[in-house]
Figure 1 (cartoon, rainbow, N blue to C red):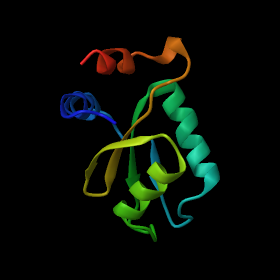
Figure 2 (tube, rainbow, N blue to C red):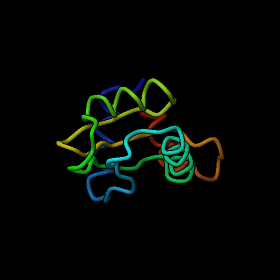
Figure 3 (spheres, rainbow, N blue to C red):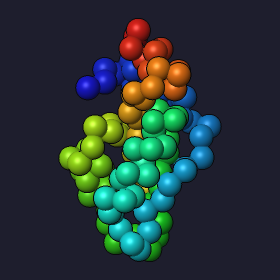
Length: 102
């Protein structure tokens, strides 16, 4: 679990980012989660957005991600979610090294 100071740092870091993934009419699948996990392994922090055609809500998406993976939802703004997960490869642990020391 992240503390408030850590979440603030991650939100500030994600402010200028653009969404990498989106949830559309196909909804939430295991393959989509696997893609998220792979992207977070390289970046540790990403944004996703829900398209207007998505049949799931933001809360359903957040619950699906947190229940089926070790990804943490840092923030939700409208139809955009900010996701964080510590990379297992030490070369990719750029953000988590800073977050851990807060």
